[in-house]
Length: 440
Ligand SMILES: *Cc1c(COP(=O)(O)O)cnc(C)c1O
Ligand SMILES: [Zn+2]
Image (tube, rainbow, N blue to C red; front, top):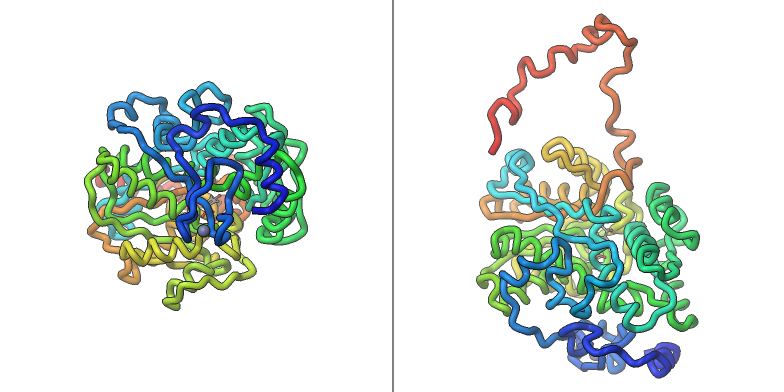
């Protein structure tokens, strides 16, 4: 723990009772050492990452189902106070779980589902983690709500801060897609574009967190609370499947936090008796231009060698992933895998999901869908088993990725003759697609 953080703890106001719900302590993932709940993220003994430990109450399916249609239906399982609904936030979660008949048929998978997190308030799964981080920041008395971001996180932090009335300062790599910059700047006039990679931005944020008092960097000094928000993806998938776990799940990997927390959520549901215990396989998806976890997986090694990202999947472009080693453990232990695909395959993944299911995903989702296809093609994923693929963000934020590959089939004068010449008048005449067969 840095002295700055220690001072911050010593001077902060006392926590209110139940400030973190049923969370009991912060526990080191490496050595198990425990510290009290506070603005800590690294183990004072070994510098390992700290994670929330709980004393869960008895929770029933009925209690959860009676809750609000957002992540707070699971508040008993999160580090948030029991009156969390009273605090302004963006109320993310409870997004659609769609049966993907057409994509499943295309890939030869019998039972395929898309968990569509692009419909969250700022159109990515990051609203979930930010809602939990915002609660922690408030309870810890933070004055500023901040983050280093690959784009989506900055959007979510800026929007949540605006709603909560807390000043936000968000940091992004200056080469980020313009729509993602605008999607932050519209909520805050304190967007800082840094000339460097995400890993440079992240390093800068840690430095600022050490210097400035009362700054809650959601994914740095309040990371243990932030990370728990991803568990709600796992809870929702299980609840929406009728309180059971899927056989296989494919999840994009940037820092690896989301994948490890979806697994943690499934384990908690088993422990709490909310779903039956069963084996499931967890698969991680990366883009080849930033695939440090996939490279380690394929090499059969435990250590992750940082890389300098070069991919259109910018929301996944973390060259030195904090939770990468845990992703390796989980994917290996569950019988899953980590795979990566080229930028061209990322684009194809975006278009494939759009044309089969009517869902426009961003490059991260293109990566996940493309990796799903590759896992089937290479025999790593069993197409006879029930599979869930997570779409984590919206395609409107990364329009440029596909702007060059799709567009008008024809540009014509406004006459029937001109239209007839395009051949498009024949559309539907010989169609054998799903509309002809009828779909369930
Ligand atoms: C941040 C992000 C991810 C990955 O998150 P990690 O928890 O860091 O692995 C995936 N998809 C999108 C769209 C993201 O913004
Ligand atoms: Zn430790």
